[in-house]
Amino acid sequence: MSGLLIKNCRIFSLTERTGETISYKNGAVGIAGNRIVYVGNDPDAIVRFEREHGTGLEVLDAHGMLLMPGLINLHNHVAMTLMRGYANDMELQSWLTEKIWPFEAKLLPEDVSRGAALGIAEMLLGGTTTFADMYWHTDQIIEQAIRSGVRMVACPAFTEHVFDGYLDRMEQMVGRYHGAAAGRIAVWIAPHAPYTCRPEQIRESLSLCRKYDIGVHIHLSETASEVKTVQEHYGQTPIRLMQELGVFDYRTLAAHCVYPTDEELEILRNDHVTVVYNPQSNMKLASGIAPISRMLAQGINVCMGTDGPSSNNDLDMWDEMRTGALLQKVSTGDPRSLPAETVLRMVTVDAAKAIGHAGELGVVAEGALADLILIDLDQPHLTPDYDLMSNLVYCARGADVDTVLIDGQVVVRAKRLVTLDFETIKQEVDQTLQNLAQRA
Image (cartoon, rainbow, N blue to C red; front, top):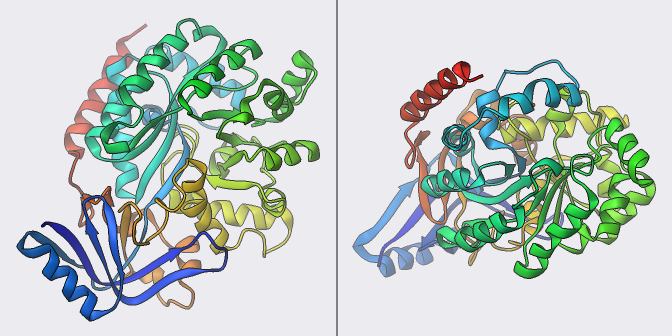
């Protein structure tokens, strides 16, 4: 019986209870299939695991490394790697209308596929094992996700101008991909935003949530101009309007939420909406600072995302964690805002809960899915180690990730991709950029 044993490593994981951790200085994790079946440091138990899994057992000696859950990025537009550095130093509406949307109008499905492969490679190398993505030609992104082994919540987007046929396309997408790749792929609907979709379209799209028990991914209250536009058109703030339309009757990822009112914060809490904090994108576009500390104080589930690599401009969740924590401290004037443990929860335990995988993802625990990463702790910037959680949030980098497992399979080993070929990806992206430059 085959399996994988990772031993001689430091183990760290939060649990679903605040203030509680799983920690071993010199421990081991045993994996059978796609599940963790042993966590601990009992020599006898480790020997039993080795004996039970026989000669087919792979043993990984992780001396000097930290084993922890893979990171979860809950708001992304991964194929926008093609636009990394393309449009800078602009506010959101000009950025979208003058640069991004005209560029995207030229994209063919194969272009999106190549951009997605590049972004997935970047995320895997940085320890992101699950991501939620909102974009077009989503089938192309899903195929790259399946090929790479990453876990994905795929969210095909619509706006008022591309809604015709959306329900039929989604029916096909859900039928083909929801639950695919041994459950690694989920498909949710994605109204782009209240100011780009008509209320009747959003309401109609929710029929898919009722029929298939799937969730919603939407941009919400990202800028002050969005709030003003929605109020002028519909007489309601964006979050209040989405509640009235019934969006929050289903599991919802609400990206940004920079400008919620006090009433809207109560709505988000009472309707169990997950807010996805995107600090670097909001900073780069000068969209504002989401009141994350207030949200957390009210019991709102807050997670984290990078947003797309055109407005960030990378997919490094470690960098996002550090920035997000520091931004809340300076914006509130309180250094106690968004402490390291809370930030780590946002990208592991709480993110897993947001997408319906509580207890299965974001933890190192027996019975959980084996989505794990190994961090090389032997680094100058991770020394000394007074406080592990502090070091992870304020010091760690994506380049510190040595090994990545998803569903029990190694997808990054010794800082090299196993399931993808970066040189091929880069060549294909270069060719795509040449093709795009020649299109009218």
